[in-house]
Amino acid sequence: MGWVTAGDYEVGLDGGKVVCRNAAGRRLKSVPAKLAEDPAVMGLRQLAEWLERHERQCLTDVEKWMVRSLPVPFAVIARVWPDPAWQSALRDLVVTGPDHEVAGFLRDVDLDRGLGLVDLDGDSVRITPELVRLPHPVLLDDLEDLREFAVEIGVEQRAQQLFREVWHRPAAVDAEATTVDDYAGGAFKQLRFLQGRVTQHGYRVRGGNAVCSVREDSRGVEARVWIGDYDGFEQTETGPLMWADDAGRVLKLGQVGPVAWSEGMRMAATLFAGRDIEDEEQAA
Image (cartoon, rainbow, N blue to C red; front, side, top):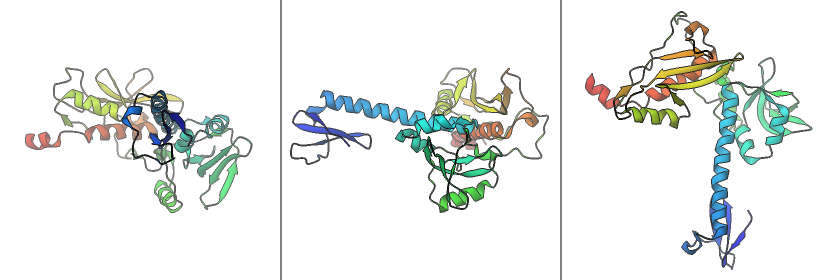
């Protein structure tokens, strides 16, 4: 951590917060109030805010790659890896090969030496793929075993991959049906509360629907849950879940891929979990 002069003090960043020390080098519990408008302090606070936004964006981008199972050029991963924010978001993610078999957990990236992984035998290995595959967890075989092994070797993923909730399409589902009602009927006192929950969890509101977009098998698929398009202060409830293709055509459940199914069910369950349970119990 570097220090810069601010009046009779020195200030720096530590853990995303501005810290201060006096001329004798003793670190203070807080930044003196008289330094609040000092250019050095204001500059560090702006830098801290930018770093925080950058870190969130890196994590969002990595999770987007994973959710969409988008192969990423190795050169891109190698270029961003030296950045602590990117490295934190990428570290320990499961990498698979072109055959969809697990290659290992990502621990290092070097432009010349390739990816450094810990394989399923606990050994350190290196591979040099042209494309880096960070699969959605629903596509991973033996997911529970991978989770147990990850805990054993001290894996800590910032991007939700191994410990992301997944839903598998039941074998008995009506393939010709177009909606899932498992999480329909979740009551909210005001539409704006449900809209807020949608955006809080990274989904979008469009045309009265909460939407979650994924890309699977080279096609775009959008999961939709009806939440209402009326006054934000009116009561509402979650509607059924459905999926549509890029052209807006509603898909039959038998046409929905595993990633789109899992992410759609995850969104519907997340919204339903915020319902006003007390109101529902009284209505019953």
